[in-house]
Length: 102
Image (cartoon, rainbow, N blue to C red; front, side, top):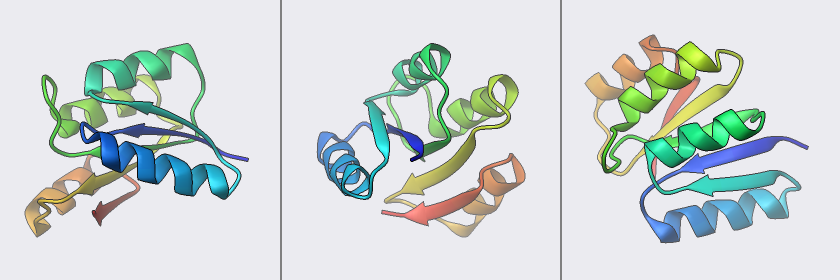
């Protein structure tokens, strides 16, 4: 069973992803912004982070950089409803495992 952290500012996205992942047997925690997400990572070990690109207060790319620096063994998958190739390539070069469109 994997431990998954969802960082997304849209409550509906957090809820749907949480339900799907929990139905598949994963432990899920959710955060509505980057600061809450990074705090959650400091509280417990997480295997995978699903990270939205566009977040209030601290953008997803900045959160990705902090995750790679402080939690290098945690895989991060970027998600976005506003994806473009340049952003996806940049995120993967920064260490994201993958980049998915919502």
